[in-house]
Length: 185
Image (cartoon, rainbow, N blue to C red; front, side, top):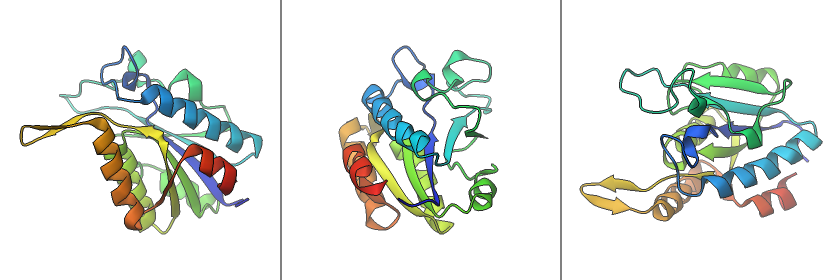
């Protein structure tokens, strides 16, 4: 087991679930897997960092300050001893204390989970690699949504597969929850 490892849980917030303002495809399945990984990190007393997006753009439609949607999902609620980093941009390192916190703990390896795969998970994993971290993205502990480009709809499954494939080329090892829990810890 790597002792200098931390779990990042990115934007697992109520607006991404049924009834929220920006529901994702597969968010329920993803949060179950995040919960399994979180349980292992807690059991092994390893660092956990919850990333919480707070929208401050005037035209923002979700993750609004003071709303129920901005709250971290009940299934992965932070414990008092767990770090919570508030961000305003897709990259969890952008204008936050995340890098300083990880360095202060001697962290070299990150398990990355969360939402949205094509945006905040992708931006954070790429930045983490650029900062020298060894990254594992647990693909089935992430969720995304259907996208549209040039009038063509791209299904969430295709978005998920494409972004995970791109990350696995250089930026991260991409795995499943079962494999991660069986092999990595």
